[in-house]
Amino acid sequence: MTALTEDARGFNLKPGHEVGEDEVCLWRTAVRVITFRLRDKVPFIDLHDVIQDAVTKFFTRLTPEERKRITHQWAYLRRVADNAAVDYYRARDTDVLVESWDDFETVEVGRIVQNPFIEHMQKLHLMELVDRIAPDMTEALELFLDGYELAEVADITGRSRKAVHSAFREIVMHLDIRREVENEPVTATLPEGHSEIARAVRSLGPRQAEVLRMSADGLKPRMIAEILSIDNNAVRANKSIAIKSLREKLGLPSSEEVLNRVRELDWGAAPATR
Image 1 (cartoon, rainbow, N blue to C red):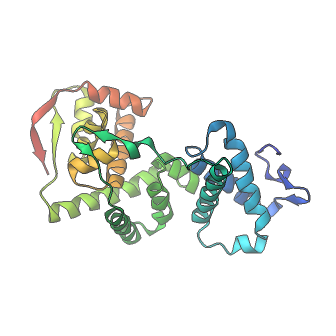
Image 2: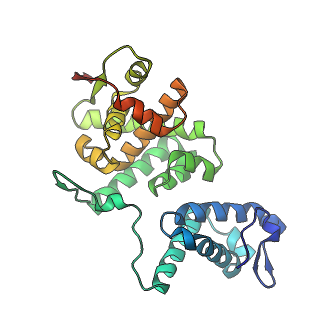
């Protein structure tokens, strides 16, 4: 197979087929989206070939006119990638890999039971919420719900990371407000002391601080969601926003460094209520 290159004009899909000059951006988008979608589903040794095959099929099975008529481009490309993964494993007579080994995680209190109906309703609620308060971020939220991190969402959609984080912070705030009305107030245990990291954590919202503490303790998003009675996507968004805030305030080089610093904190026993 021809190697993937940055120059779409030099990417020969099949004999007699090339990406047209007017579709260079679409080709690059297709490579990025399909790569993000497949990188955790296909073994690295075969990843290049599967990406190449998926991109080739996208540009050879559809005419330029048909590609222009695609309404939701990212969703279509994700489906192309998923089909490529299924074809890959069918060809090898084995099962398709799951998105994450977290799906098999067992905790001391027992296996976490997933309810597809509840998860579907939570997703619908999130989509309705983003349609109301940040309609230009609908595509970004769809990517986030598909498992991409906020930084990846920003890269794929071409939006700035600051814009994506700001929009998702507002969505998370609305989720917390809704929970306060329907359930008990949001509470969190906050760290004691006067260190820079302790002050930074206390400046976060109670939900973000609680999610950050549990994440530093090694709990996975699904378990945190179970404990706090919120949905898994709200946990992921709160964690991403909290880590980004602390990295900016403290100048820390990585997310792992943030979690390491949080683990060293002395967390008080008295909960803070908002």
